[in-house]
Image (cartoon, rainbow, N blue to C red; front, side):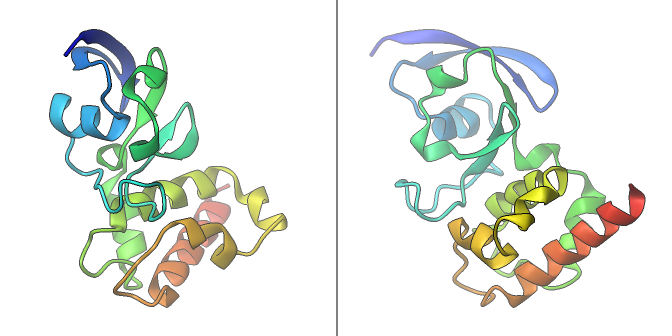
Amino acid sequence: MSHFDLTLELNGKKVTRKIPLRSRLLDALRYDFGLTGTKEGCGEGECGACTVLLSGRPVNSCLVLARQAEGCKVETVESTSTETLRRLNATGTSQCGACTPGIVMTARWLCDNPQTLDLMSLREFMSGNLCRCTGYDGVLSGIECLLDQEEGES
């Protein structure tokens, strides 16, 4: 299998690794860069567990080829502050943890882009992140608290 050098800004640091040509961004993050916080749920872009920020936008990393991230800024759940995680989990956002990284990254993006909620409800926006444990009330409450706190800090 042929490889290529992937250079990107990963969680604030410029890095380069030799990656198999057909690797998905999810695989490169987990296996080549050793960042196992991003989870594979479905491998089909349906569950949102593998959500990362690619050039500032949330994407399902299972659907992105690693080579598409060349020269881009990628942020994973590992770049999230402990305080943000604590705020989200205070309302029961996470139970088993399988969906948590994707929810956290989607919530982070939403905190930077709250005007999105002028176009749709929080429940609609988060519909791309599936959770089998919480029933979503804790997830939505956690994100609302995070949004309120972000708004208060502005």
